[in-house]
Amino acid sequence: MSISTVAPKARFSAQVRLRALQADIMELILDRDLDAGDPLPTESELSEVLGVGRNTLRESLKVLQALGVIEIRHGFGMFVAPSNFDALADGLTFRGRLSLRHEGLEALQLVDIRQALEAGLISACIAVVTDEHLVRIEAAVVRMEELAERSESFPEADAEFHRLLFEPLNNDLLMNLMSVFWKVYRKIHVEIGTGGTDLVHTASQHRDIYNAVAAKDAKTAAKLLRTHFDGIRAKIHLFVDAE
Image 1 (spheres, helix red, strand yellow):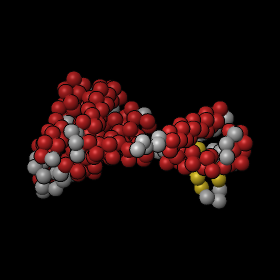
Image 2 (cartoon, one colour):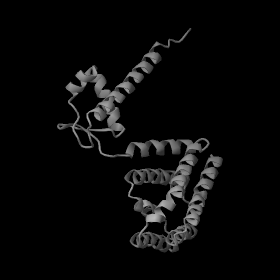
Image 3 (cartoon, one colour):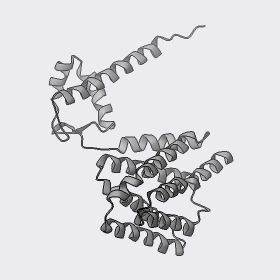
Image 4 (cartoon, helix red, strand yellow):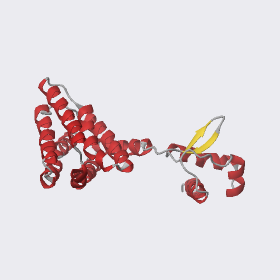
């Protein structure tokens, strides 16, 4: 007995139409030169302008809200959403954790991307870093060293160290992306377990990176950042092999 493919095809066509409608809504936002926080047209106007029914429109609006493109404030209307990378962080975290149950490929690729960003941009940071920033970066290192001596983990100080390294670039998009990768990195780290981590050695790695940055030695700083992620890579491989 053959199985009908009408329903799957219909669903596929509906998904294509919804994606096209979402693209149309985003184009409307751009065409009208709306900025973050600006109100969108009402549902009635959007429905008329885009030539779609209210129910279809609402489905697309819900997706755009989930993607962080728009905000729906009940009782107030719809607005262009401010920069929000939560959806990206959630999606990458899921993909990374899912891959750990198989071959770990996407988790490893996420580490590769973070490594490439940090090692590739450190020379630009060194060119503009100030003495004030160096003081704050070293304070994060000292905090890691103090906690390591007490055998206490230091994810907050670690995150602060990496954030401060790249703050001198004054690139908001970069900082948001770095924050996303840090959140994903932490979730993956928790997933594979923190046992066996040499905290004193990890703190020492950060001290070496700081020393290279303070000495304006971009080549050494980049090399240290490239090797800095070897530990998490090894842990991912061990975790996947044990599954």
